[in-house]
Length: 192
Image 1: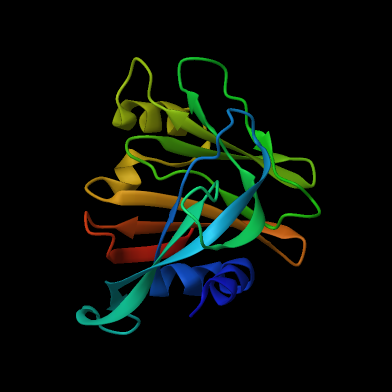
Image 2: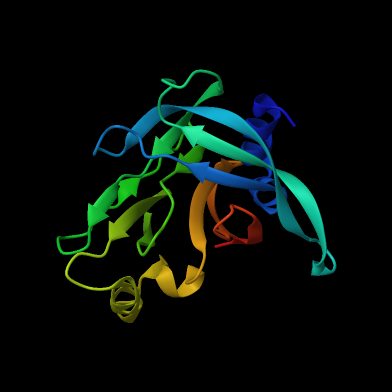
């Protein structure tokens, strides 16, 4: 699959894309949540992924893709995505409202102790990427869940690299997770 096909599959069938390919998005060079241009890059590296029926008893190969927020390394195919910046957890949560039109993909950098929070905001959702500040990732996750928030946090991806993406399909945002091992092999992918 080339980069254009990868963008199309991420937009139209994100779960299939994440089950078949390792994916990492890099942070945009801004602290503000906004639509930003990213570049889909095929790293030309094979990864392992679980089979659809037998899981890890019958693994398959897949591709490793990255979404880079700038094109300073050259290459890649440009596309627009809503970027969710990292925020410290010791201040008021500021969820970024996802667009109703235009960019239909939401990206944030990989999770390494952080939590993702999704809250309804009118006809869309607000999303926040919270970095534990003055607390551990597990404590942050527990605190947010106790407050009744919808959270993907360290307890969900402990021992793995956590990936969280969103896609607007037929006008409705959906959210998806991917767990990877230290070598970027796909351990699992699920709808959030």
